[in-house]
Image (tube, rainbow, N blue to C red):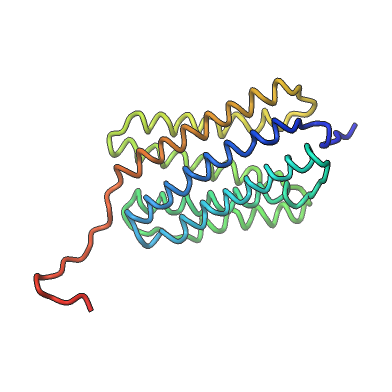
Length: 225
């Protein structure tokens, strides 16, 4: 039997759904800024990736709020989540990989994966392939951020990103189960809030440790023009 979304979500639960989205968005933008400061060539791609992921999360949260309040359902707001996550996290994974190796790596594989996922989803008329790509890309972001934190001897930051990585793997399948009680939804959502807070704290710690790009030296008295 189909589930009526207008009775599935409580208004308080829908409002709280904005909290992990905001925490994740802040963490992604902090991380993107730090990556761009360390390797300026990836700044635009990293920031765009963070914005796209945040937009997808806000769209889903807004959809939930509309169905929980005035019972207005706009399917596009819900359906944009997985494509946005797949594209945005792939861009951030490219930026992280570039900073990790110390040079800009080819963006082609990172763009090809979500493109193939979108083609398969379009042909099958099912967003499951995009969900898989989004999860894979988010795991790559958590893993590489953890590796960067370990490289800069931040063990707490490393474990914060590992918690995020585990949450990324465990929470989506749990949240996708049908016929959940409101109590269970609250547990899952508050857990997600904690996971995204770990990511934000990890990103803030990593941003203080990533080295800045070397600035070209200018002889004393020389002009910058």
